[in-house]
Image 1 (cartoon, rainbow, N blue to C red):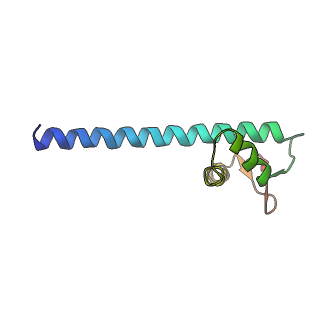
Image 2 (image 1 turned 135 degrees about the vertical axis):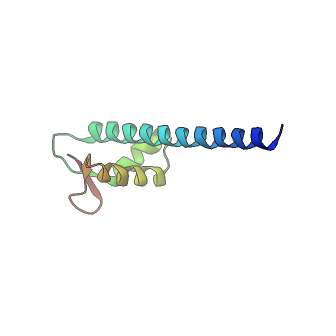
Image 3 (image 1 turned 30 degrees about the horizontal axis):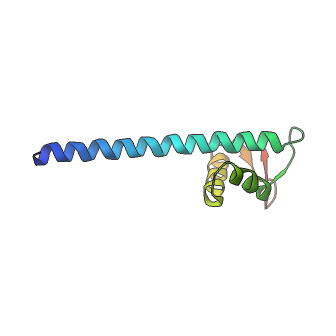
Length: 90
């Protein structure tokens, strides 16, 4: 294998890793939104972040993944934080 082949192989590996990371982030967003829908008793209800962390933990998500996903969902305007420690679907 020459240097050009090796460099091309490394580029393909980086692109694949990047694609897998994006897919994982989307999967986490879907999981968290599903959890929020299940925990929400009524439209506009506030949900404790701790409850989301506990439910997501049952699905194999670490607390850090949940918190970063919540931040991403807030950035996407899919949820809001009406007060500290609570989130709400928009």
